Image (cartoon, rainbow over all chains, first blue to last red; front, side):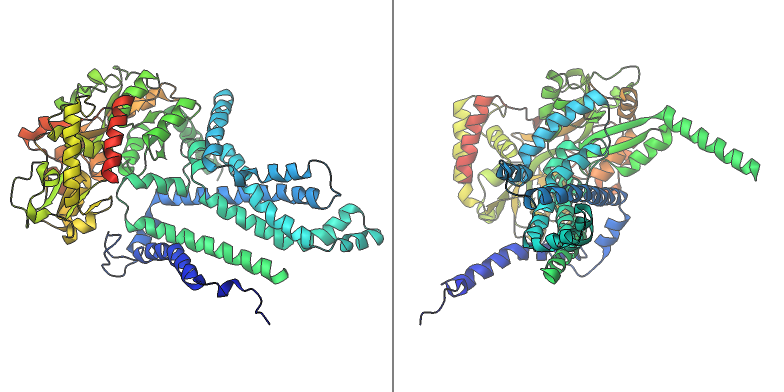
Length: 266
Length: 343
């Protein structure tokens, strides 16, 4: 009997897999290692030290931009998730309607459009609004980040909804639950892992965004990524590695939580 | 108790009005380029609250300000972009009633091509691109482009050139007898091209971040920036920074007030503030480049005051030239040569 097809037995699979992992993770590993360097070098090891972490924590500007980044990511991911839940319900818990695919594509548009295109489009619109209203607060960044966080929040919620047994809701209806009650006591609790996953994905994506922020930010609105980008022209010290490592750790926490939540109930 | 409350309220009211009267200033500058100590002192001296927002390239800054609604008051473009900023009407002339100390600008930077008479801009920081060479191996003249363009045998295969077209082309064109980086003289361009192509086999790499390699002696010579060269020399005293006598590129970032600034008066106050030698020195002590203000040397850090990477030998000052932005057709020829070199 022929063995069933197994991709892992394809010739060269191990080599390609190994090369992929090395290329993906070795540079990050090097970055992390040199964040503990005692010297100012990015390539010559001069002993272990936590001085760059101390420098990063003592740097007022780093603190400001980090807090702004976290705040922005929290708000944007929160609003995006709140919008993604009804969007996911409206595209799965209904009989098919004309234009459904189109709506699906529209919601996920930020995934397809290159960031630079969105960035320039936002630059033009936001500048126009700023000139005409005089408002230069964080609202623009929140709106922009929310917009491109929506698909990242939407997809896990929708995936969760598609695996939910619709008969549960029908059973609730049979027991005289109003649609609101059925949603509140049946659908929503079952949806929580999807919502949490969506929020965390959105949070991490917002935290990483450079291009859109660069074009939309007003005076004094640098986020951590745009701050780090701004350092490039100067000599980069391991302080940047230390900051990057801290944010990498934060991203890892979120991704791990995402993984655990989706696995537990999935 | 009641009295405490009233006095507290009065205090809050007083501080609120003070902040209102003094206002704010929004600076749009390269990242990690604005001395935090200077900003703190400026706020102490004037009561003006400052925000700093970073940009990562001249093009990003230009694109954002062109659209309007940016909310910035001061921008710090590089010399080759200043004419574009002025011609597009994005800057406003400096107010002579507030910016009274333009005479503090060192004479050589006072009447520059990109802003004749310093009507719109003042120097922020400036630097050079030159030749860094390890003198434990090379004993000849350090002020020559030949070290890289026609390398002696002891440096063969141990040379690095930064992958910056404008810097490398400028040094090659000057060495080939051109007097402008935007020269249309085909003979000069051909000589520059032939020299570069003939030199390339003797190079090790065309790469950025090489301070460590210079310090360790893996790279013995190359075209490099003065700021990075100073950091390399601090790690390895054998390294010396030379200024090609045939000509070398100079760059300067300049502070200017935006035409649609919301706080133009505060911006003018800041411009005049950084024209003071002790304040200009604070910029240098942070960014580690020269500032172009007469008398700032005495306020600079010990290591910078006499650094050969910052203090250009008098006889070589005139060989330093600003590279303007070249017209499109010239730029195409330069790009062709550069592409051929990188292949």
